[in-house]
Amino acid sequence: MGGRPEREHGYARYKLDGCRCYTCGFANATYYEARERAIMYGTWQPFVDAAPVREHLLRLRNCDMGLRRVAAVAEVDRKRLQAILTGRTERGTPPQEKVRPALAAAVLAVEPTLENLGGSTVINAIGTRRRLQALGARGWPQAQLARQLGWTDQNFSTLLRQDHVIVRTALAVRALYEHLWDLDPRQHGVDNQAYSRALNAARSNGWTPPAAWDDESLDLPGAKPRGAHVESPFDASAPSAQSLAGAVS
Image 1 (cartoon, helix red, strand yellow):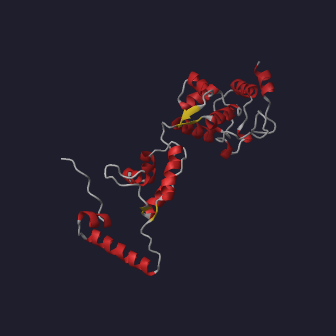
Image 2 (cartoon, rainbow, N blue to C red):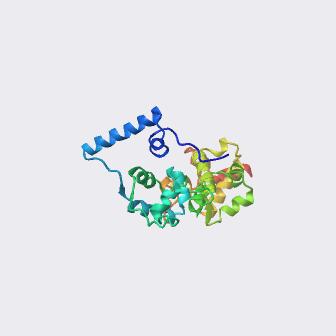
Image 3 (tube, one colour):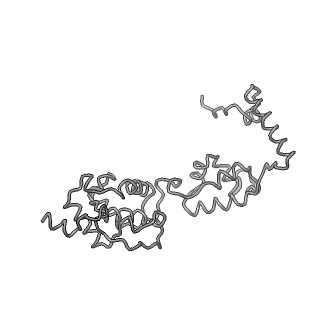
């Protein structure tokens, strides 16, 4: 027979379940001692205005973070967020006007970062494309990038033309970029000919290397790259793409 799992011993179990064990009794006494002390010093604040929390929930919704996802990230009950946003229709209650400070702090701390968005959420692909193009401008062949991501060459080529990707893809590309952006491909299994072709392809497509981007600007649609050239970036004496092409022809 399944039922609701028991609460952990503590203040909530003392108040809601009537448990009078030592742990629950101690938690209850500690709560009231802290409460009395806060009242004495004028710092007791059992509730805060719910309006900022409601506004934040609406902003998160506009960034494709629904209540279920916000609740998971904030580690709170989704029904509590529903009560703040729209009220509880099944009870006929309007949106809450006051909330507990801890709940407000937990929700207001949630930001619509890639890590917090659901893996299947669709987002702008510009940061993903720029990262892959920058790796190409570093001399990483598309075929090798595709293999490291577990994709086919065709899927990789399609991605470079897409306007939108899901968060899971964006995170995978970002992790790959962080791993490879400052590595010399020739020291990691890329031969001179493939390296040269990657640089030439990047140049012909107008792609810019990692040095042209600040990390914070990679995902901004209106950001522009700085004037970095597509060439071997690893040492001053490294041969150019043209000389490499001549050496292997």
